[in-house]
Length: 493
Ligand SMILES: [Ca+2]
Image (cartoon, rainbow, N blue to C red; front, side, top):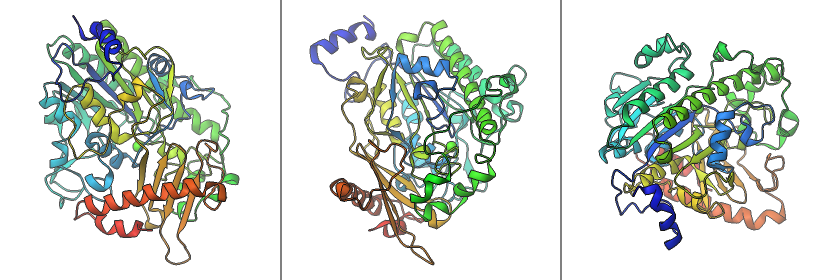
């Protein structure tokens, strides 16, 4: 009897989570195939399933209606490199210490990442796209230089590339063979996925395919075959679009590139044209997701293949008068998340989950789905109990960290079910330390800083306590050598 056939019996008998305990390894007829798909810089205002009226994302919307869509999913670090290290290691930034201004992913952490743990547990693994980091043997290895390496040998099939990779498939060494049929990289990654599935779905062992699309990250180079998709459309701006609502945000948040990009990236002057190209990039991802899902069905593995779709960070797109990402506000730090487990009785019910989740949760989730023990070092939690009961919770809080860019913009925030507390400690020159509190449940657009509102006092105090716990963890668990230890003092209240 196949796993998906015995599943309803198991559920009726015990009413327990879908995911078998990591202490009871699954055999290969039970272990699902895993497909982890990640966009780059995709905000939630970009998909039909997230309520964006003009978005054309039929394949992603179908995935959402087949599975569960998450409305409170955050990235603990809202910039490419740090976020991707969160994802593979399941740990917070101060523990993995991998980011643009800090250093590469340390080999010891990479050895405990989900792709390597799954491969060691017998999974065939594949990766294509922008991996976003390189590996260094020790903490002292800098990002630039000849002492880092791409982990191409650590996968059974490799279509990844260094740095930001290129939208021109021909320029990505490991993807060249797709260049004639797919000159733009987004659908080329779809083709890589199709080939991988074809090659590994008839093996006796399960597979884990991870694809990190470059889209919709800048430069603005959408695939011209989709030029007509959003031509001439006037887009509806979100309620918090533009500067008029942004004055309640801290002076610290207005330093650095995010603030000036409202104008230089033309959200203020050419919103419709800019957004048409942004959405066009996401449309190409949707096409690639469609290619991959079709191949899963063609290979008759659709009943035992779990999909996860998300983004490495969000994107302001002019909300509050900001562009880009990095800052702890919703558009930047909250991202799409869809999980589809075809074996589960909660699938095909168009369920939404409003419980808190984070990008550090992916590694534990993938390992749990495969019946692999979750390393103790991981800060993330298995997300599948939320699939079992979308009203339950797996975490009370999540830290949102920014220690990239000018020090003025360094912030530590805590998000909970109720709201978000942000501390901006920078207090030199004309700055003074600033705190913000947004009640996300009744102010989802973060239009009112209620830090001094007496009605919020109890919640703010609770959030400060969570905050202090993260500073304590930061002090105790950050690794020395990359400047994180002293930042615990910077963030102390
Ligand atoms: Ca990114």
